[in-house]
Each structure stands twice: as structure tokens, then as C-alpha cells.
Image (tube, rainbow, N blue to C red; front, top):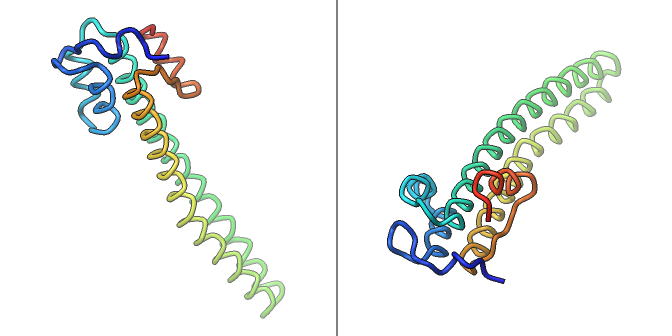
Length: 148
């Protein structure tokens, strides 16, 4: 069921659902919505949710790379120990571990970005339909700031 404020005019003179949609799809537009919009909590909620989503995603992306560096370091140690202890068989084990690590470096960041873009698109579609869709954790935080 659409939110009562979803199809009212926003502070930018467009429908609130279109302003919320643009907030998800155009980087700076969420900040513009927060600055310009004074009355419509539908628009402000979606702007804050998008900003929190980007913030949490950025933090998660840095954590992902820290974990990948640690995994790479551990695999290099294991590969070195295996190579010195088992000769040729250890070298093969080390090579297999290295290949798995490199694939992890390629696949996990791509999956992370796809999940982020999927979340943004889902939120944008829901906002355009006039729905208040709350992402887990982030949506509740945004709703505490701008109740909808």
C-alpha cells in the first residue's frame, strides 16, 4: 500500500516517489533531498536509508578487503610450509591454495558489488511505487530519524 506522502509534491517540485527514486539512482541526489525537503518524511526517509546503505556498504567493502588480505597471508604461509615439508606435492598444494585465493579475490568483490546494486535497484523500485521498504537494520535506523 502506498505511503500517503508518496505522491505529494516534494521540495524540488516533483512527485515524492520520483524524488526518492532519484535519490537511490543518482549519487548526490539523496543529499539534495535531505537539504531541500522539509516536510515530506517519505522522501527524507529514503534519502537517509540510501546514505546509510552506502556508508555500511563502504565499511563492509573495506572489511572484505582486510579479510581477503589476511586469508592471502595465511594461504601463503600454509603454501610455503607445505612446499618445504612435502616437496613437489607441497608445491602443488600451495599452487592450488593460491589459485583458490586468487579466485576469491575476483569473485567476492564482484558478488559484493552485485548485492549492493541489487539492493539499490530494489529500494528504488519500491520507492517509485510509493512503498516504504526498510532494509534490515539500516531501514530501522532511518525510520528512527524520519518516521514514516
